[in-house]
Image 1 (cartoon, one colour):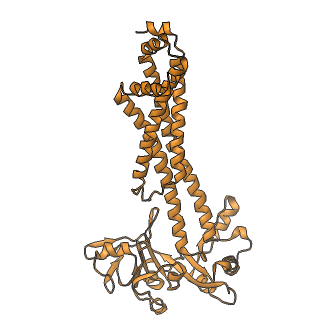
Image 2: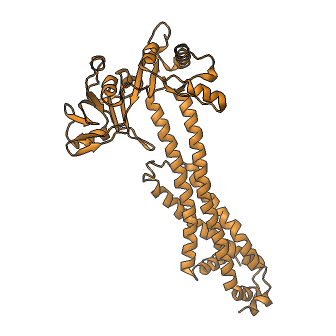
Image 3: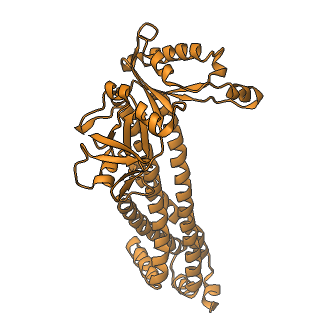
Length: 406
């Protein structure tokens, strides 16, 4: 028998039970599609985090309270932790002690729901800060203006909001000059920020920024700062600026050693390395979960092919009795299994591409080309591997025993 005849027999065998063939193919398609989509979700999440960090700028440093310790010594250090204050931020502006620091902005976060008539919005980022925050965090104004140092000094209740907050409160109307109440306190909107978009689970446009004095006087009280944003003079002086921050804060917080520091510094490189590492683990875990579904599809091929061999035992016996060689029987069933995995793989790739055009758990999937080739290649190998045993079993049947089978 030539190859074309073997393929023709294989295709005829698959059409004997069309529903079973379709369900088996669907199992492979789901596995391949899951691998592509889930890896795309992991990759999309990683890219979203990187884009969010890029918006901070390459010379931005975050200072946060707290330390990373364990055991009695860490507990003792935690009990003596000195919170970050506005005076710490003021000290970091000293050009004599910190020549590599361009500007500093303290941040006091609050939780407040804002209302405008019947419209409400609870910004995911509600912060009191200084005007330096806008440049240090790469926050650009789309309409209106920033608040000023005079607004901070006078404690004026003015605010700059993001696009999501503006839409929630004002719809298509311009928010500039209008007043909203946040936590029962009136704030006048003087500007809106340029659209940032979402970063994974974080909406960068759900934003409300006001003078820190207004937020502390009206909403939070004079509690410790949530963080301090520091901008170095350039990306090349970030390390020097970080050293200057440590020197100033160590002196102010009476830190005796690096192990007892009650604050943490995060620059973009550190955040990017941490997020990249976490994203890789996340993507691998998603790939493993999807790979399990692909493996289950392969087991389904084995099961279906074994059933097919049993159902067609008499046919196999007749073909061997009239001279069909063992290799022809083996090739036929291997080709059947491979066709199932090829068609399933192709459908899975198509489903993966379609599925990657929709947001999943707030993340826009970004397809990794290598995952497409990997998933499709594995599906073909699964067809060959899991179809090998049923094919070998069919080819090994003795004609006399196969003809007796009922």
